[in-house]
Each structure stands twice: as structure tokens, then as C-alpha cells.
Image (cartoon, rainbow, N blue to C red; front, side, top):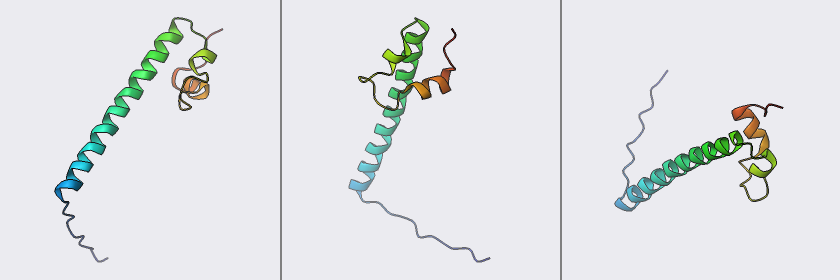
Length: 76
């Protein structure tokens, strides 16, 4: 098998700045989503209804199916 030597990508200063901004915002979004799930879990543990936690005011990715996958079905 022949090894392919890939050329080194050289970014402009503008590209480096945009890349750094994208990475920083992606990391902040991940941290914010983690904090949101922790807040949802705390509210659920305080007996807030799942339908209220995953209602129309909540972004679609915070839905009841994901809530149950992450934390299990609510005990009866």
C-alpha cells in the first residue's frame, strides 16, 4: 500500500481566528447543555412534571424520550 502524504494546511490569520471562535462557542454550548440537563434533573427530582420540563417552551432536544433515556423512567 502506498502512503499518501497530505500537504500541511496553512491558515490565514482570519481563518485561525474564526476556527478559535468556533471551537470556543462549541465548548460553551456543550457546557450550557450539560448545565441545562442538570437543572432539568434537579427539577425532576423536586417532582416537577416531565410534561412541564419538556413542554413547548423547552427546545426540542430536551424532550421526554431523551429525558427518560438519560435518567430512566420516573418512578410511580
